[in-house]
Image 1 (cartoon, rainbow, N blue to C red):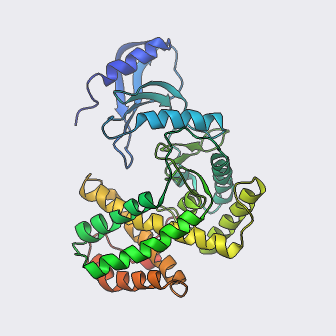
Image 2 (image 1 turned 90 degrees about the vertical axis):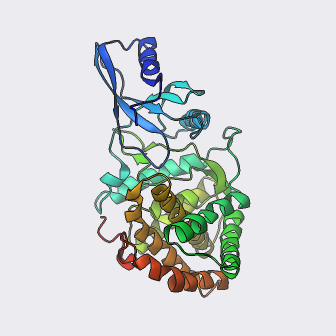
Image 3 (image 1 turned 60 degrees about the vertical axis):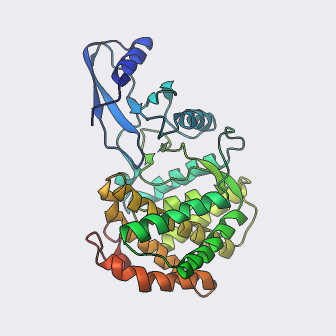
Length: 358
């Protein structure tokens, strides 16, 4: 793969000159590790006469990435107190961006038993500001039942059939439809707010003297109030004791009531929303991680599947008595899928997945 698409380096140089950040010699774009999308990030290498601000050049192919949404949402969120990267320059038609660089200190790397209370406290306050945004750009659509089902179907298509090689019968498809319907009902019953949709430790950065830096927000929708909360507290890349997760979730619910995001609701109902929203997300993520591997060649996500499975099966077990559709799904998963999963080269015992991450 070439360093960048045609014209990208020249465009970056032109933006630097336009902002009077002059340099001598060749401008080099130094690639950074990518994310789950198709964007590519580059730091700038050149002999600058005066050091420019920390900048990232972003190559986001327009046929695959929505730079218009990124720019519009980024500017909107910054105006509403959410610490998103400043957009220095953008060519939407070509998918070229020059943005503020928050550095490399992912929240994931900074989290440990000593730091988690402070860092999660800051992350939850940022989420509170995000959810208080009342009038996002018109391009932000609703996280409705059809969208939820579209995401859930990724599980059957990519995880079950393509990764595990298991063919679903009509009866099994109907069973999944019933289970998914329960999750959609719960999501749609919740208060609807602005949802980042990927609010976790790899999309939050620790910044000097400021609130967490928030990135990868261009897929935001108007959706369930617990979605981003469970994405953070039941992170696909790091696991915390369930008693702490419950405590943090209920503390957030109380703050959300205080600022008017949420009407008073019982702890039982809020935690049910939280559980079933996480279940929807993690079922979807099983499919997405399989797709990233099989379609996009990003094999590192396989190592995260056991932890995601652990979340799925724990919530299915906890809700089995109250929900026959979820009980049937859980029994089927363990009987039909788990034997195939256990033979996969990436498999580790899901019951202890995440134990050594902190």
